[in-house]
Image (cartoon, rainbow, N blue to C red; front, side):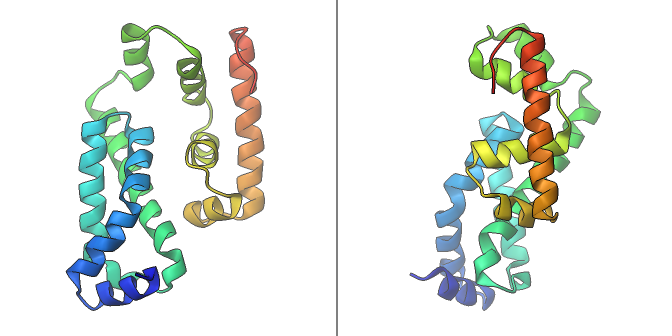
Length: 172
């Protein structure tokens, strides 16, 4: 069924339509949550919470074409909230845990280098390269001009190169 029709029905309280909408977006949201939270259990919990928040405020969606962007924004906000809570609870960050428990390989080196660069730049790189979003979509999600997103992407990639060069490692 057409997403626009599903959104209209869901806004009128049709639970089945809302369920179908979430099924369409479920996998993408889950992948995004895993990439931010780095824990499948927490990612599943994030998906549940985002589904609840979306259900509760579906009537706020004004244009059907922005539904995906709206959902992604909810997920990013939730993941940021969880990250801040996690930082308050535990002093050690994810990189420290990875260093203790995992042998380094290429993806781990990139992941570690990513977490050492500016958070805005890291977020743009993750959305662009891990989730295959276009600059325009990233700009909508982060509520910033496309030119700013391009700048953050350029600076982030340069910082990532610098991080990897320091280790004599990979080139991005």
